[in-house]
Length: 282
Image (cartoon, rainbow, N blue to C red; front, side, top):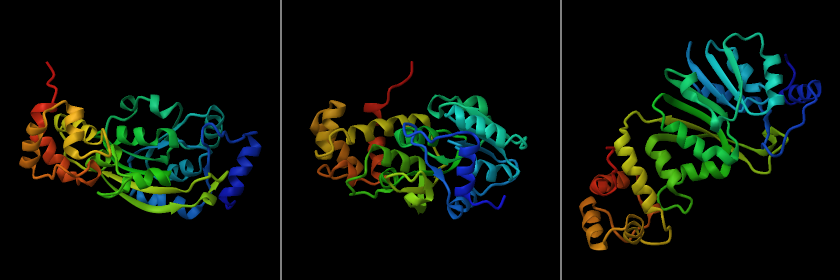
């Protein structure tokens, strides 16, 4: 039990004849301090329900299993799934599923509120986070993402890295960086560094308002280098004079670019353009 995480991970690889797969971007956390920060940041209470994405060799899974929670660990790799099933068989509060998280039906597994934790694969991190944060029963996410994704999610108004993902994620949630994780915190070490984020969902949402905001944000960012009025006019197929009035009404300078707007600006813009972009369901 006192074996270091790196040794333990390598020992499991040997025991089960496992080789990390490049195509799945498999990198395993071996830094005990970061592991502690992850567990602490989840603020676990008895009977919490937790979803772990990409359980790997079960380093975090086992730590979480020792808390009095219900844990659902999802792992796409069949070989790792076998390791997890064997190594964690003594924990009745842990359920392990071999599946691709982006194809996975969370509705069937979680009826009430749940928390999310995991080291997110780069290819699907953005779309997965947006999907999760839109769900009313997800309260808190503590996730490891590539530094580049973290920078996009945290980028302030005026920053070139700010985009649709940034604005929508910041609309749904409060995002903060807990800690940066250097490459050597993992084996095999990835080429890029990662960051651990805490994402707490805001409580207030109506799906109708969300639909409007989504379309307005998309339209505003549709041509990044153009002024707001031109981007909106092109994407929403609306007359500039009409949009000029609407922007004035919202108190927003038409010559700004989408990345310059704060969340509140997008809310104001969505209110004045609501009639134009909301598609009513018959």
